[in-house]
Image (tube, rainbow, N blue to C red; front, top):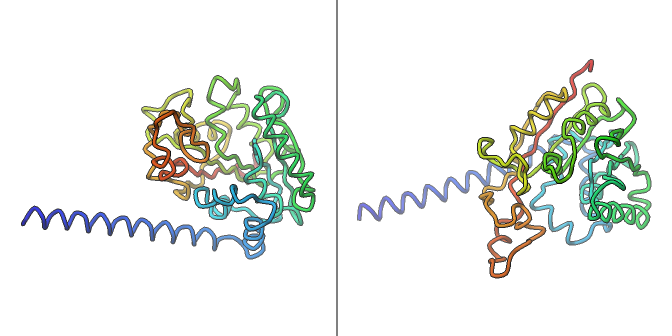
Length: 291
């Protein structure tokens, strides 16, 4: 009976801990949403619900927490923002309508030097701009590909640079990119005091990190070191996009998880659907004043 009592107490404790973590997460998300000014918050809500977004893209909001993430970065609707390697434009669908009236948005694509799948994604975003001119009409395209294409916006003009799930590519030799040059391009584009927002698949232990990020994961320590080497200062990190269900051990890395579900025959699809999308870091950096 003593063992049963201990078991029940352990289970109850685990349930209570889970509830407390859930409440903390909800409270944190609400707090970040409230940090947005009313105009920007309303514009994000309208963009998220907009008919230009597919149901498939909207379904990913539960994993990507776009409103809370942009609030953490400090987005305002009157900013000049550069989105890095936007691919098909999942975040561009949100940023473009928020910034179209008073702000400015540059999409720094991989351009003609990129891989074929990247060029395909670039074409998808261009098609969206043509299909929804009222949403994307003011979007301006630039190119980021080291070492030759590094001017992502007129120097010293951007209030914010954001990059979502890209840093792991820049440390992967397959891409032949120079991560130091790329972070330097961010620094050059930003005004003094400007913000760099980074989200990527998070490897939890820098001591066991794959230096090539072949599974798609990169450690926070490595990203922070790259940003600091370029001159940035770290001003915040958030658990908004942390996913404790992701144990970081999958046959095909992050691509085993949603939205790719790149699985081998016989693997349990529902197991990966239950995990959701990857565990992700969310980091905020600042270009120091006077730099």
